[in-house]
Length: 182
Image (cartoon, rainbow, N blue to C red):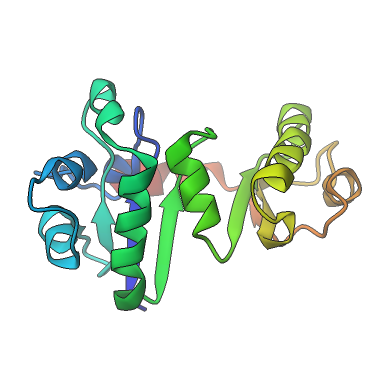
């Protein structure tokens, strides 16, 4: 599939590291380009991963995050939408203006949670926030690091009043190897 991945965790994004990419350019270079945002510019400033995915990395340093506005994010999404089958956006754990713009322009929002009390509490808060920002109906919940521990799928479903979309089994060794190898 033709996939575009954008790291909107603008201060501490790690998509580049997870993809084993050390990008020459990042989202900052696109938004600071005086010629404006276009699909050509986006392609020039993005990196093609060995999997074929086009990856637009977060700024290399947190202080550059301030250059990226919600308006920029809207224009980037608008420009890439006709050219990619899937657009994956990692917003981190924030509700910044850029993240809200990404939510508004999304068909589906996947919220990734761990099966623990802190994550369950966070998901409940996020549910209320997302319900006030965008349609909660387009939010899907994924349980990461799932095991048969104290917190069950039903606990999330009861608290969130929604079926869990998927679970990802925990396999520490495979996960760490995957992260460390990019």
